[in-house]
Length: 444
Ligand code: URA
Image 1: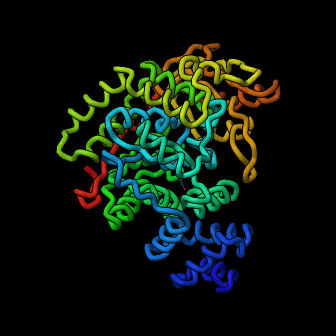
Image 2 (image 1 turned 60 degrees about the horizontal axis):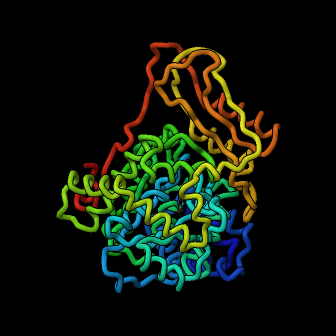
């Protein structure tokens, strides 16, 4: 296998020999193909695509690059959820302990921030002391004790995804359907699950913004899961606006904790409960949608999900005080309000602008392995459809200094588009589609 030949073939749009692609990926993992060659390949794949056979090689090599967990000894179903990446998407932090409180086991392998989107690992690590780099032995113990455990790709689990994920993040090669599908499904297949829920984001803040292509991504992932006997369901969920009211690692974690405590924004709570209900149905297919939602709501409102979260934080080395005092996660030294320059109706709160804004404030990476500032970000106090008067507060910037605060204010002004009263506001439904293998990949 000659690396430049593999890159050339993809660049010129020819189908790759499976064996050559496999050797190329394995050589990258060993360090025999450098990052710059892999970056060239990924860009070629971004433009030329990968066919199903090539995608399958990616899935297999990423999956087999580490261990595949055998969790069959656990006394309950093993169900996880993975999102394709959004802005303000802190669902996993609430959902994993909620699902554990519902009697499921959630062995969650997540990622860091990717492109303009935030990552679960960065949000978890915003809690002082919280460790996401646990050894597998400890991960399994916590899973057994708490019902959920949350780590990243490691040297032991999906190490090839770990390397490619970090490289794609800084080379503008994330938004490719086969690369996303292979990245997500390799991690999830390594978890040894009995059911998987996919949260496929759609709208301007998603990696794949167009509905028809988001459906294609969902169907591709379901096909990968189904081919390996993993019951997989996908929901298409709105990302034409941020989820909840916060964007930025620490302040999103604070919002997730508020949700677990019975507060927080309505859209976050609604999505978490719907997704928990889907996870229950993946575990117990005979349970109807209404019954599953009732169970999820009871587990949240009784405080059982919060109690699981507190145990998770403690087990993974985090400071348990954050559970009672989520405001302690507001650590940025400077906070300023951004105000409406004119009266009107909010037509759009652009998620991508806010996500890129967090990266500019130091809350995301522009270089691989870069340290990030967990405290920076935005609180967004308006939503599409709201009427505002001149001078109303649109949002709050949390920054490290005055320059950051000024930059952040401009980001909010750009992200919140105000139109004339009476103009039509377009909003996607929070959940627009449910796709399951039982319907042969059809939209319900
Ligand atoms: N989430 C992942 O795990 N991988 C991607 O490529 C995108 C979102």
